[in-house]
Image 1 (cartoon, rainbow, N blue to C red):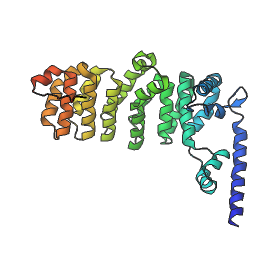
Image 2: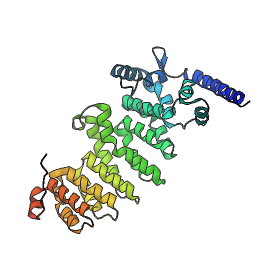
Image 3: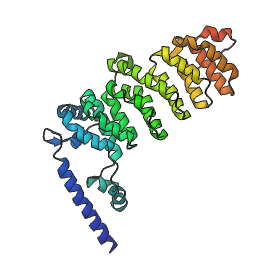
Image 4: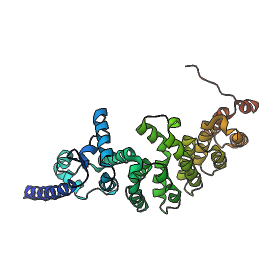
Length: 310
């Protein structure tokens, strides 16, 4: 009797999936194959397949956006966990209810490929973030659209939910590494990154004043990663050296050190930080940062660094 119920349930789900698949087949397509086929080519590790999938996406252009937004922002089907428990992961995927995490990751890649072409979808992605739904995926997709979409993060500073703010700023902080990975070109050689960096830095400066220390810490890390607009970044980071929490202080020290001699105006603040550091590890981190910024000032202050032989 129990198995009859299981078989009946699977049958109902399979029928529902068949109906959804029929509806999906009316969406964007290229060379007679639907969007979801080309998405499976992305992130596959096969360069030829990935290039073919990317080309198909560009050919579909804005026609692909409604389905891409749906994949990026919709919640997992409540039917899927029950089905996986009954029939296993493999059969669930074959029945048309694949793991949404993989689909969402491919949809993000698609937005990065489409870049500015995906701009009409920006507002729907923003709406998803504002509602706290699939925040990381929607934010990553939004970044893929380019510098114009990054401007939205100015409003993200005012989001009421601290968890949503934290997720949003984490995605923004990861942008340099994400960009490098997806575009396979050096950041300094990319006109798009150079145009996006000042916008991102201006937003991170606002996040550096957030009441949540985790967000302030991430903002400090991000300023170090972007290394842009040092005229405004350095004063913000020197202020964070006096933060009441360890995370923002540590992030600020590392960021200033990564700027090297360009952060020479921070030398007095670094010296003060080192002298009042409450722990030995913070003091050492401060000395290392100071040596990167101004070795002469570090030597004059009596700070030495011993390099271990390889």
